Image 1 (cartoon, one colour):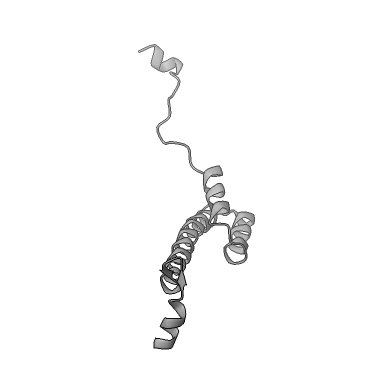
Image 2 (cartoon, one colour; image 1 turned 180 degrees about the vertical axis):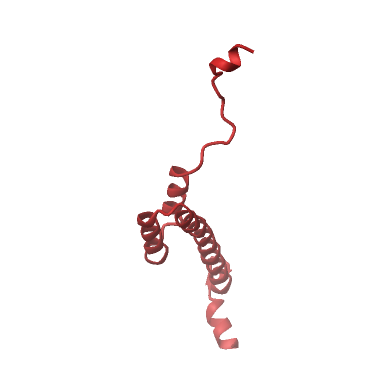
Length: 97
């Protein structure tokens, strides 16, 4: 183990390769979690809305493409529900009151 540490600690501008490796690993984990959360939400919504084509596209993209969840975010933005608070136009019956 000491030999591995000494190999990893070869200096790169004062920063050991070991700490660089840990930083990259943390970044990869963070990006992976980010991607899985967005794809998970989008896949759930496609099933809920019975949108088979989008489900297949997102499912394939989840495992074959690496795009930081951008496709899932685009899907969620396109098919987001409108705000439940909507301005209603007064009807004829409400004007008479």
